[in-house]
Amino acid sequence: MKIVRVETWRERVPLTRPYTIASGTTEDVELFFVRVVGEHEIGLGSGAPTELLTGETSDACAAALTEDRLARFGGLDANALGAATALATELLRATPAARAAVDMALYDLVTRALGVPLAEFLGRPRAPMPTSITVGIQSTESALAEVDEYLGRGFRSLKVKIGQSIDEDLERLRAIRERVGPAIPIRVDANEGYSLADATRLAESLDALALELVEQPLPAAAPEDLARLPARMRRVLALDESVHDEADAFAHARVPDSCAEYVVKLMKCGGVTPAMSIARIAEAGGRGLMWGCMDESVISIAAALHAAYASPATRHLDLDGSFDLARDPAEGGFRLVDGELHLLDRPGLGVRLRGE
Image (cartoon, rainbow, N blue to C red; front, side, top):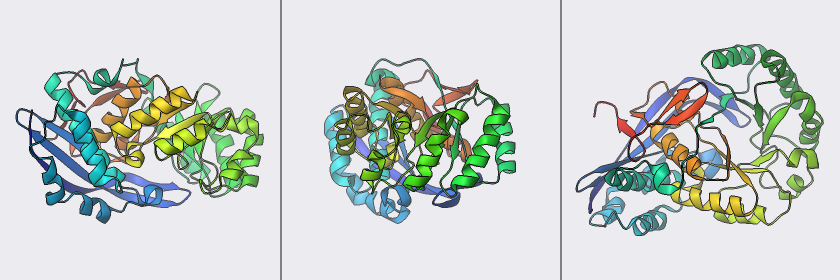
């Protein structure tokens, strides 16, 4: 099946509420969309560039997805998927969200044409898993109200953002744990916001707070401090900003007990192709995976979910990014059932643009 053309456009989408992490507050997100048009089928992709994480600005993403550059996909045999995704890597290596959008659209095109879900194409799909829902940095009172709302909507796992003040974080975490009781898993994410002293204080409260995972407490630029974290914390440590690509995953896999899990994000690594490579490295190195996201369309969330369900190394999901959008130009992909993400029984990513 020949690729006829690749189309792209961008949309600014408001969030349902402002969202604060250690590095700042976000009120809306700029999303990029890709449609790969084949002779008999189409494939959809979406990207959400995140400058703070990858250095990719919205303008850089737009500059990467030019008509002239995307024209190079015209005439390619989409069934030669490896060659097509390799071209995406060659053209878009410096802009991972742009690369991810094209990469997943190519997978969507091919698996739609085959009539199989992407997860089945990538491997043996696993049973549905719960996703965490994220509580941003805010007052304890408003955090508790948000927790009550999320539990009422059926979520059964929480990720709490921390990293601006260890004292306020501990106060908020104690209140949340008291509110939800022992049965609800709680993960925390400091987004590199702590000093080693702060992280050590958090480590002293791991058992009392019954924290499931601690995500990136220290700056990725200080690997020597990560190595000095208490062993108790490293057993529940998930590395996000420290693991962007296959080389990072391999480097940490070579260090015994460096962490428990890698956080894989398609917008960080560049799509399904590198994500599955990271997944294989994690499995070989005895590391688990948590699949995460930015504020994203259901298109890219579905792509991450298919990849997650195809990997034996997957242990946790944090794929809540589409729930934060006030509107999404796309629909489908998955359903939320009792806090779990269930893939729709449709070919490809199982998504479509609204109104089409």
